[in-house]
Length: 185
Image (cartoon, helix red, strand yellow):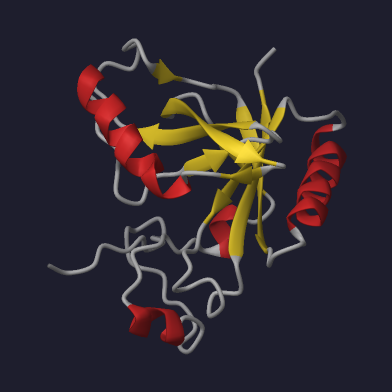
């Protein structure tokens, strides 16, 4: 089965060509992790009026999530109960927490008001960073500062999307997306 990849498209729906060599090592790994184009995600504002998620909670030990590997399975089971689908390359956003962490898993459903779906609405300001071990807190603070500079106030929440697995983390330099969420007033 061919590997599904996100490809940026221009206004004519033509694929945007990327620089050759940037992800050659990752392509050889045949990794299913999503690859985001920095031009579409770094310091970009996105409208969240139509996006839906399934909310889950996972235990954490001093902020380190436990059971992250079973998260997509739990999300798929929850989605099946309400007639929703979890896209293969959908967002998996993790919130803060030392003992319990809230996780939002992107879901698709014809019934946007189905019980169990969460619609955060509002806008988000995202930053795509290299975030190796030990630098997550610093990158989170950078995202918060950039969002405050952009909007003039603190975000309602900041979410983290770890884009790499243990197979592709090093070749992809621990790509991580930080999302500052602002609810509509």
